[in-house]
Length: 309
Figure: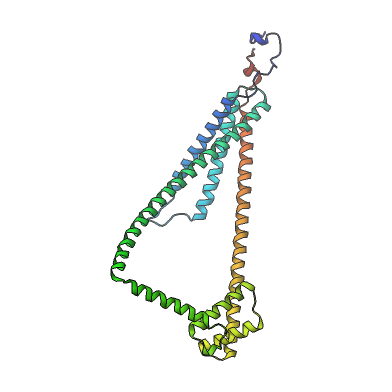
């Protein structure tokens, strides 16, 4: 003989009614907190284990790649364990007997834990950046004050030892030299001074860089200037110019190739990181749902029905 005891609210009926509120935010938050706490605890344990493997005295420390792989695996497993337990806690505390509702609680817990992690990580990064910026600003301020003091003292010494006439004379010499260099443009290279030839060569080289090529007249003029400046034959000057252009072209191509390789490496790194984050989040979602389904209450326990044999 068996006797059936049931909650008065559901007396005489099968306990199939669903609770009035199908979501429990308290259970979701509690599950997220538990997931983060367990993940943090396991990560601290992993840090301790990793630190014990460092043996600087005997130089028997694993290489950086092994450490990186081990740390990545440990971080993934720790977070998955935390999310699985958090999903179980969220579903269990929600009191639901529906596997669908438990699954949704697990998914909500998973989303809340990732959002909380993102906020905490963002605050941590912002704090570190702010501290670093404050330190750099203080150091720069100290350097600037020291430099200002040195400059002030040096300025006083220079002012004491330098007369106005000497400064004006030196300035006038610089101006005269620049004017002399610019005044020789278009003259015969042999009759020009070294400063005049170098000034015109600089102009022609700049035109070659900006325009990509020189006209025949400009190239002949540059060859004549180089020959006169270095006292070589026009043929040798032309060979030097050709060799210089070839080296510059090779350097430009190498720089462009390195830039392309760096861009490709950056794109590949971003792609790998994005796929890794996606797979990690997907695995976390799956584990959280599995944990939530394991934490689903049975129907009799959830709605007060008790059957005694």
